Length: 148
Image (cartoon, rainbow, N blue to C red; front, side, top):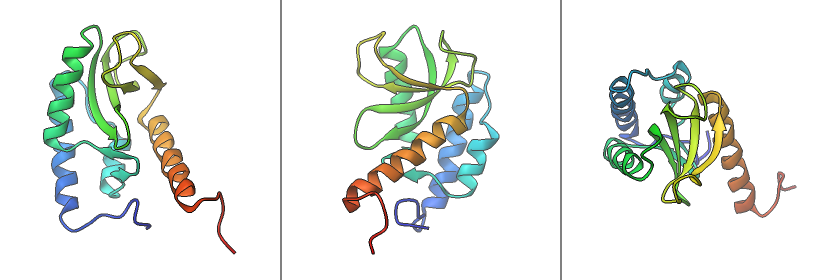
């Protein structure tokens, strides 16, 4: 496993704690953590640059901020980009889809302009996170393939 997805000492405990906090936040609004997310956490795939899953304090802060800024949309955030204000969230209530739909919200955008992407499932969003990881790695290397 490369450095972009490696778990460091102590991070496994943080991942378990973060998943527990997310589970509690989702349960409070009548949703449960998708099995796909459990699997990703179990495999330790929680830091996929530029995305990372939110830790307890950040989850709480993001949830409060999103609720305040976007009063017509109920979401529970679970991951954020490290290089901008995009936040991946589970939809609780909104016009973009049924509960559990994943939205990428550009936090701090004007209300009505914040939704960047909509995914039918967690796996749809996870594919985006993997593509972003690959794209960032290729940019870091300065090419799009292995060096000879």
